[in-house]
Length: 322
Image (cartoon, rainbow, N blue to C red; front, side):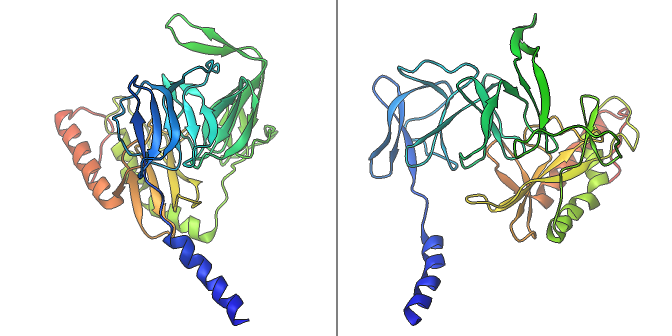
């Protein structure tokens, strides 16, 4: 019995003592990119043409390995861009092509492409929604719009639009959701139809959101201060929702900000926040790689910037009252 107890107690000690192996990108003589570990062992051979700026010996950051380019000898998958591997060198998926590069994470998931179909993967590289639809939008407020039988059509401004097909709405489990026949102010409007609010919280999570709700007026003033159209108080209302919870390799809650229409603010990382797993420490996200800044420091800088804008533009109709 004592031996069994000792073994059980030892497991968490060992799990917490394990460290992530350092990995590094390397370039071959013909400028192809691969990955080695810290002892020089090749984890992934040099077989990728990279289009982003990448230095020989640059450290791999994050939970997966991203090759932002093409694989030599492999035909390019339509609407895909780049390759994602795990840190042991196993291929995971190809990201969806968006804005001349790999798709961004939205509400904890990024679109991927396989055999012409679109699905989603999480930040650890796990496919959380299988690729089954011809197109899927990024998630917004817990829902994503998808279509089957649709196609891409080039527009006059060299962008593409999606035409035709049968359209629907999915939740974060990939399940098709039907619109409501009756709705309330708490529901979500998508293309003129309403869907139930999908966010549900524990008491601990409600306390996390209360922190942001108490800052709501100030955050709204900061966000809208440089808009030159006058907004009413109702139109400036912000909503805060937890879109990611602590998971392996990610010990945070992520909180996103939405406008009065429950649309995500048109920003890739600003007005998105991280909260420690115990719910006590708050951060603002500073860049695409989830770099963190203590919330208090971030707020001071945002107020200072907003006040400087007001001083330079005294006729701005949306005022920050600090």
